[in-house]
Length: 435
Image (cartoon, rainbow, N blue to C red; front, top):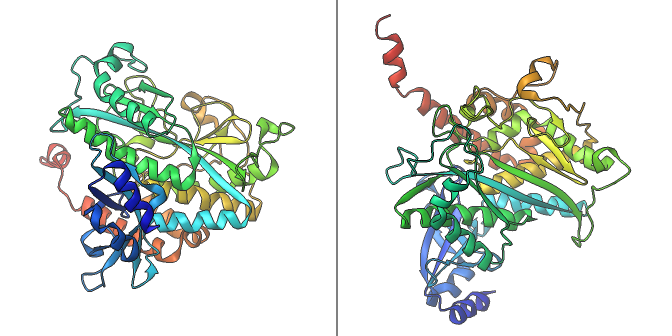
């Protein structure tokens, strides 16, 4: 494997490798390593002080070593002398179990024991802002219903086309780009893949888009709700489950309702069963709950769920089944950690299979106009603290995700919540100064 990356560098003219890992808060951390030293990195890993990033480690912990995975290597299309490579974190020869990529790898192995390969596609939405991040980059992008706006997408053609060209060159099979439902908001799509490659691509996509936007004097953000009154940024996940050779959809059955087999219903049942706890992972920031519990937006709809329901081909529910053997989870938002998103989908789905979970009643109503008629269906958490409490109560999901990860994640996220509620906001002065 060491020779593979060294050979890659020689053949591609790569001078540096960016050895990268993603921490618990979704932060991408990296060291820039000369190609001449890559053999040593493959052998021993690049050294990091884990405490300096968002991991539950102390300053006294030994070095955390990030060992590059050669299968993930991507040459930077906008700076070809550099190659990015995802890394697996180890400490004193053992995996760091709280590291997100390790959590996902462990769950991919669990699914393999069941003879299953989870394949997913993600739909990351994002805003293009001015360089200081305060305003939408395009002042003419101001329509009430801006979704699919032809003129607006062409005004940002230079950024969108450059990133899409790079995805095509990388073999990702990019297939469409569009202006989304908020002013300044866009989405780019590429073909689904196995869960780990999808997470690597998702992670690299965020890095690539931000880099290209900066090159054009703009700022790209995946913040779930950067502007009040506008539709927030989701990261919908399309999920299908295949046999181990990847040739047969294991959950497709044309004789069943919506083409979803009994085991497929069980997998979906796991997602529904754990939905409230799932939100702590799929909607990981304070700002996330401005999206999933938002009032009606200027465009007329939030396009985000607030209730645990599923349906056929209907975008007003948390889960929709648009075709045989696959479904779309509409809960995640732009802030979601690419690795933890995939991990929690697998964890909840596998528990659904093992417990033969029933997804419950299917609803085909418009949840935005008739949701009040639904009785007895759980509401999604109202804020990050509620979501963390739901996750903490869900002992099965915590165990599936790993006790070390769950403990670390809950600890650091509770600290984040405490920091948030300790902050004095302008709202407090505006509404209580005269009390």
